[in-house]
Length: 409
Image 1: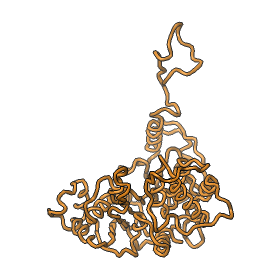
Image 2 (image 1 turned 135 degrees about the vertical axis):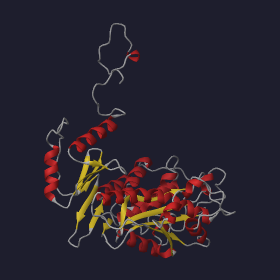
Image 3 (image 1 turned 45 degrees about the vertical axis):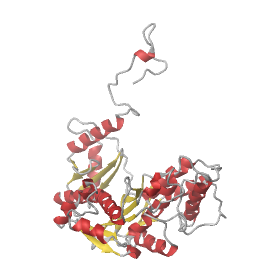
Image 4 (image 1 turned 120 degrees about the horizontal axis):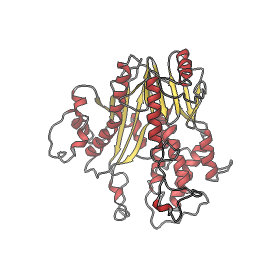
C-alpha cells in the first residue's frame, strides 16, 4: 500500500519510492473482499458446510442453507434448533479456524434495506418505504403534490432531446437515479422500464428527463408502502416470461446522433412457485441491431435463459443434497406478435434458415435443453405476457393487470 502521512522514512527517502507490504488483510484494500470470502468459506467448511458449485455464496449443511452477502448472512432451516446450534458453533474456534463474531438478529425482518413482513394469511411482503421517502424528499415533492397512476407516460418514449430545455432542478440526478435503480432491483419490478429509460440519459439530462423522473416520484407517492407480495404456490414451476420490442425506440430525428434508437429492447421476469425470483427481472437494450421481430424475440429469449439455466442447476443441486424443492422444469413463455411464430420455430426446431442464418451461434446455447425437453417454449397472448411492461410503456388497464399478476396488488 502507499506510504501514509506521518510515516517516518529513511533520511532523504521519497514516499513514491517506497511501499508497505501488508502482512494481514486490511479493510478497503482491493483484495479485501476476496480475502474475506476465502476466510468465511474456510470457516464454514470446517464447521460442516458444503459450498455450492453453482453459486459461491450459497452453503449447505444437512437440511440447512446459508446465504452470504459479504458479512450479512441468512440461515434457512426447517428446525430452529439447528439454526441455534450452528450460531453457537460459529462463535467457537474450530479445527484451526478462529471464532466468528456473530450477531443473531432473530427472525428475518430486514435485509439489505428491504423490510420483510410475514402476514397471517401466509403471504410475505417485501417493501422499502424508507428508501421511497428518501427519493420523494430528494425530488422535493410535497404532501399535496398530485400523484400519478403510471410510472411512465404510455404515450411518449424518452429520447436524447438534444435541443430540449436544460436540466435546472435542485436535486442531484445521479443520486436519485441510483436510488431508483436499487429500489426497482429489490422490490419494485413494475418500475424497471421507466427507471432504465431515465438512467439512459443521466449523463446529460434535459428538462424532459427531469419530468420523467418526477413522474416516477409522483407514482411512488401513491403507493410508498407497497412492494412485492410473495404467495408461493407449490403447483407452479419455474417460469420465464420474456418479451422484446422490435426497434421500439427508433426515432428518425435522433438516429444520427443516437444510433441506439435502432436497438430493440429485451424484457423478462423469472418466477418460481408463482413468485418473482429476487433480482431476476430486467429491461435492457439489445447490444446488436435486430433485423426482424423474430430475431429480437429470439435474442431476448436467449438472454433470459442465461439467467434461467443457472437457477435450474441451483435447484437441482439442492434437490441432489436432499433439500426439499419443488418442480425444477421451467416453462418459457413468449408473447405472440405478427411473426413471433418464427422465434418459437427457431427455439423448437433447430435448422438452417435463409432469413435467420446470420444470427450468432451464441444465441443458440439453450437448444440442447429444448431437445431434451428440459425447457418448454410455449405461446401466450400479449394481454397475459408479464414481460410486456419491461419493454415498453403500457396503458393503465394493462399496467394494473400485469402489476397484480407480478406483485400481488
